[in-house]
Image (cartoon, rainbow, N blue to C red; front, top):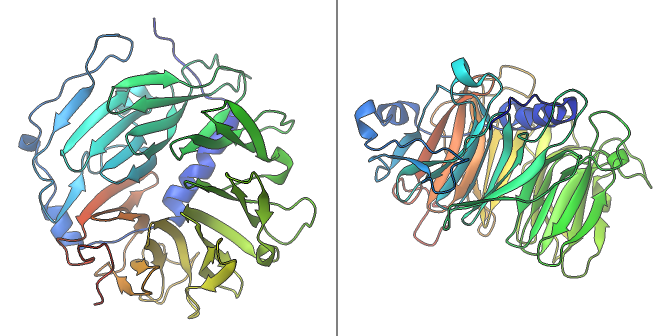
Length: 407
């Protein structure tokens, strides 16, 4: 039996924060005319089965498309739905989105698009909000409201879905709010309201799924905001309670040694959007009346400024050697100004090669570059996007080894 589930104020505060990160600060690239021309028509969908998540022997809903062999295309369903979150790993792009406003009202389901097979799967279709979708390899994680009773109940549970076995797994069962899980194949790091006495607050919890051990990386008093995980490290932004500064600091935790470290150079500045790949941490920092992109290599203990030209550079994303961020240097605009005056750049951390990947300034929003695929968004209205996909090798943006080709 299904029940209508209402959101708690804590989770809505979480969602509001994530949506602003996804839609307000992030921005992205592409040839607009070519991508609009590549929008699939209704005839492209040849199979659409509806999956009832409560039926044990049901097959996942799947829609087959035929346009993924193109250099550029728009990810369906184009512009028709609210998107709460989007994440990718290699060939997979996971979204939490509003499916049918006429029926779902506050319902958001989890979808997975396979860029190689050109198929989209419905992997969770339950009442209430499913949000914070994250994918690693063939496993999708999200926060789920299906067991929330409404009112003052702040319960949200973590779920995962295995793409190979098509099995959904409920990971948690307690009355606290859990949101925005990120996973590296063994560890999950997520927002957790355990112990929080202030409405809407959360700490940051690390969970070793192999040993079932939990560790608090940041308490709710430190107000952790952005977090990311790689094979060996977790990185996040939070206030330093021992040495309070102007803005939040960058911290990282070594999963092998169990030690956490604050990067000392970050305490005086406004640190925003953070990402992590391998032992490289990438963030945006307002240290000179403009936001710049900062790279920190944990192994070398070195911090490098990647931008410093008097323009705002924002919302960096990093996967392997490929970084993507939005920039105002081509439009001459600035953060807080005209939101349409943005472009995107692709930067190779290994070689230092940078190239513009938008042909004209617009309402682009950062996505990920994970060779050969790159996806990004064009903001049409709050939480309404076009999701653009480019095969970077076919487009001549990267070579066969995944390095950025100079313009």
